Image (cartoon, rainbow, N blue to C red; front, side, top):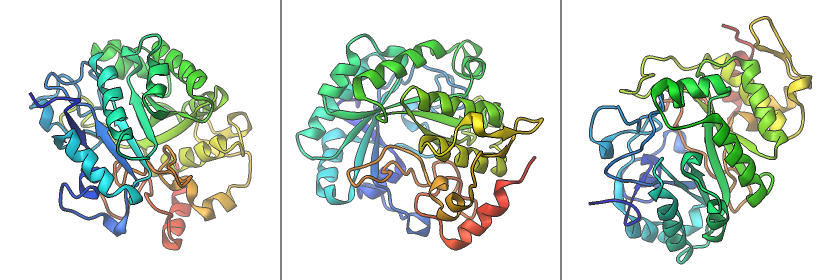
Length: 340
């Protein structure tokens, strides 16, 4: 069987960047992080309602899309060889686990293989549900310098609805928060990131509060805009309004950079942000808050820029994989205070 650690899936963007597939990026975007995904024929044991890899989704697991695109399967050593050939243009590697206990060991095996060949920082995107005592220390020893934890949902009730008992899934909010805190102890403040998906049913106020909580315990937030995955339980769920996403992007940037706080922000009767506690004009004009948030690479900038993982390439970019240009900023300014 073609399974990890001998085989690994890569994002479509990573496949193009490594020359394993033909293609080019809209507006000449470049990918700086090679995203890898552990693979077993049995698939992932979780059933998250919005995920393309969910257990009950019909079709061959190997053919299932994830975060909007295909993740082709390759021999791991072939991928490492391509990474080595392009080491000068790659700033980070992220190995993503699926919810299988076997993935803990195999993630570390692959990281060690990579470390033997290249000097590129490695992140692990882990599944807390299968993490046991001592695993995080072993992750660090195997070469990871940052940990990602996809909490995804901003509140315990939404988490349980779409990741836990509501979909007969194995995940528990309490376990995720426990492992997140432990990861900060092992890897240090600023080296553990939470994924949050805007648009799962939370209010803007709830999302901002969750981002502030993660910052206060020593973490960072990597922000996603919900995109319906065909065949998933939420395939007919709509993405969040663009105004909502723009406001959350600004709030995340201000909180993660310690410019403002949740308590300083104001919200209307629908719990939408009406004031950020500071003048946002210079940050909007600069544009960084609208770029993809993720782990930084060896050059100190965000490397995990995931081109067009939140939307189809076109005029309606949500997470910019490059600095927004002047015409982008003018468009964004019109979107920030759209209330729906």
